[in-house]
Amino acid sequence: MLESDHFNTAEATSQEHVDRVNAEYYGRFPFPWPADMFVAHADPSFWRTMVNQELGFFDGRGPLGSTGTIWVAGCGTNQGVQTALRFPDWHVYATDVSEPSLRIAERTARSLGLNNVTFERASINEGVADHFDYVICTGVVHHNADPAVALGRLAEALKPDGVLELMVYNRYHRLETTSLQKAVRMLAGDFGKRSKRDNSLQLAIAERLMDGLAGESRVMDFLRSLKGTHSSKVADSVIQPVEWSYTVASLSELAQGAGLSLWLPTQNIFDLAGHRVWHLDFTDLSLRERYKSLPDTERWQLCNLLMAEESPWLWFYLRPDGVHRSPILSDVVAERFLDSSYRPAQTDVCVYVHDAEQDRYLPRAQRSRNPSRRLTSAARALHGAAEAELSLRDAAARLGVPVSNGEAERLRLALTTPTSHICVRSDVVSRTE
Image (tube, rainbow, N blue to C red; front, top):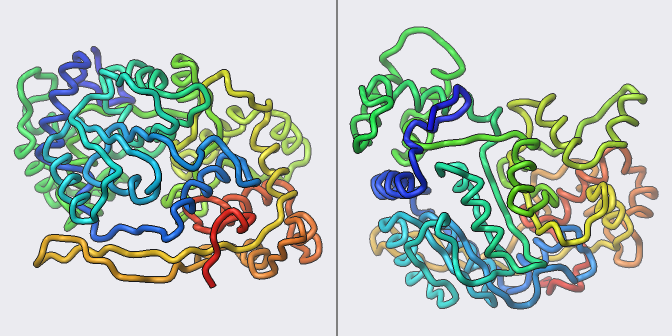
């Protein structure tokens, strides 16, 4: 496979070869590094309800029921454990090609006393025999020789009404990393070779490069920002062997090839911190109307093009094409949100903190903190004035909070999604005073 200027695919000779390369690479640099802490909610339905709300269901219903099965495809060291904590009444099947990553995950699961997760060494390119209600695959598909094959295996594993949570790299976020990966490989002297890669040599070259090149550029600024960080983070950024990246349009095309459609974006912690949403605000009324007339995928693609490196992560929920959807789903969901009643929901949490001396996770009881300190003034006002018998639309009108031109979408993301830990209709989530 020839390497494109846009991608780092020099080592993508075949699916089997890439699986071996990735197993070797993540065996040397398990990713992410073991977490300092994990969080469990006292209410076992809390996180599931949040995901259903993020999917657009605010009535206590949704595609994720009281119990079910989850496949975490490419679980790394932490994601299978984290998912099992968030869905204690579900069974989690977590797979990865890296044996060291799985050993770390299994040790963590034992320390936390988890019995609802099974770990297995397997490649997503091989698929699985079972069908799952929920498949989670973030940061994995784009590290394969042919991402279309990998995504097709995930689609085959979904039940007809299932949900796939997928993250792939945003093209506009990966200029620096792709440039560095190619530059380091060239300096290591094995660019284009098919022999076994020397990860240690490339990492040493990357670290020397931090101080060994005069001048400034976005690429070098990014590399120097990694100084002093965990070696797995440096490796993930600058010596990753295979990496594709996408725009909304190319991701949508990839999904369609697998019989899937982009449903809605997720509100991940990175976009939450940067206040990034898939929405554009036009002051020109004619442009605003043109924008509103477009379907979701074209609106999101416009955000990708016009926001470029400031556009959100390509982190979406996908669903099989047979699942009914409206032409402009986000508008429908925003209207459902405004017509919902709202009360803040809370649940106690238990924080498991890693004790280095004992090499285990120890529980520390803690109350959840709602609302998020990152809330905008408008979202905070609605949260503070919550009345169960009043719709959010009426509450916003009473408070003078705008809900047009994308504001409803921002409020929905701030008040009802898993990342925000705040829930619409708290009668479906137990409330601890």
